[in-house]
Length: 277
Image 1 (cartoon, rainbow, N blue to C red):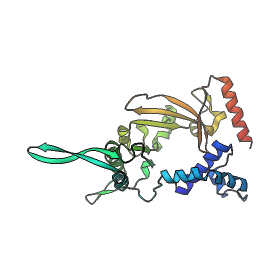
Image 2 (image 1 turned 120 degrees about the vertical axis):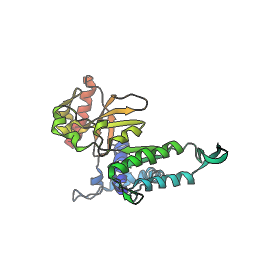
Image 3 (image 1 turned 45 degrees about the vertical axis):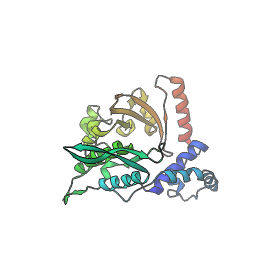
Image 4 (image 1 turned 180 degrees about the horizontal axis):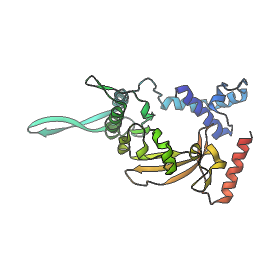
């Protein structure tokens, strides 16, 4: 996605959360209809201009660097420009050598997140003049570059990785193995070993499932997702959180449990009002 598309998604999200106005990014561009965007919407967006300016201030959208080393070099350069690496001396058989000890950021309250969306779209790189495969390039980016940025600078890599096409095969459907899994990571399953926590997002409606964990998917359709902790260094695997999802506004919120009939009815009434518009 381009920077423009990301920002339009932010516009839709803030309009919905703050003003209760439900309008998709495509409708904000007026590309699907001949109707010109209402001036009222434009005035509301102007009211939140400081919010959007802040997003552009703290988020750097990078779409021209697609290989692992380029990503690593860019983020490392940022770290060195916004902090200091301290060194210590070690004695190796009488030779004194300086090695990196720790990194001190200029702003100790800054959290740097490196978001890669998504890792299978990176460009394979070369090492020693040899063209590497996508699988090899993904391994280097995950287990070498990103781990260095995490461990040396305390930065936070966030990697989005899709499931392989085989995960949605007829055999998996028969065996009820359609939800995201570590074994189903596309193009390179080894990346799962490097993560502190791995989350999977599942849409039963996409696979024509009628009932899932007690939720009526024939009613919820595309308005439901299931967020699951697939694994992590601190455990918690198997924990699932049901979510209401509105794709038009990129909005998620936790759903009540399926046996909470009163709250489920309220959710359905809310969804009905949206679907009638």
